[in-house]
Image (cartoon, rainbow, N blue to C red; front, top):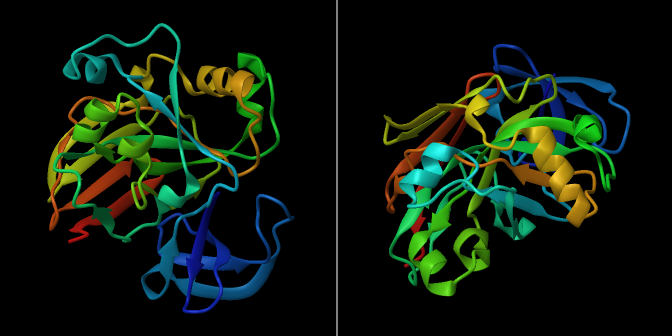
Length: 257
């Protein structure tokens, strides 16, 4: 089942997206917290504005260097335990929204990733229990200011600035997270292409590890890391991140100046 969050110019609503990704059947309420009921209204996807499918009420948890090939291209090895960092929910934007590059960074990179949306309160989960906490999966671009990442000595500003966490186009609830392919395109050219089976730490392990440190709340998002091929993006360019069993997240990059 694909669940989108959208607007027709009024208050945001939720809907079920058909298999072709062309139509949305509107539903009542927030599916994270209430039972799904169809309203009877339908919309063409091309006639609505898709929004970020979830705005985390609590947190986005990022995972660093979770693909060995990406760790190598960054000059290191994948860590023995998942490397976690936090991103504020103010960084989240939706499909088509501009990613705004501030004037105080000169080296911004794209990072296409599979994102996990948590569906229930979870704490101290075992690996075996972990996937029972998942509501669904979506596509993410973990935008990073590399110069700030190096200069600050930690990643909060480099990865957590406003608009630096695009999510979308919708949430897929029926998915094997180890059987997807992430393809990132910069101005139409493929720059990343790798299977999620190459993750060093799988989704269940990531959820379990995070839940030992943080209580996970419904709507929290875990970014699972990026394959090799990260690189610079500048104002005026567009980045598309496609996960074959979910869809494509596309965002233009613009300058704040």
